[in-house]
Length: 51
Image (cartoon, one colour):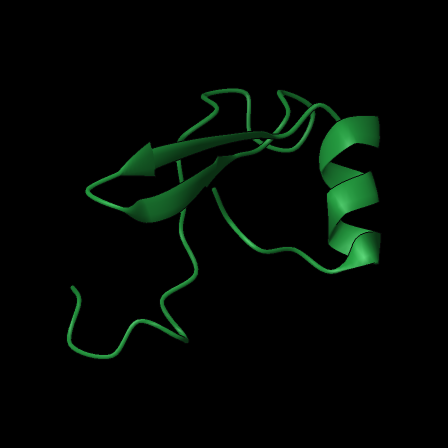
């Protein structure tokens, strides 16, 4: 589970994003029109000490 604001929660559903959890960290998979490879990305801004 991950916490999203209302705007980003809506965007995830409307634009075909996916969220997966790896070791308790959310990774976001963009829709194919943003990244055809659909490479998982994560927000590192709020993860102190996690690389």
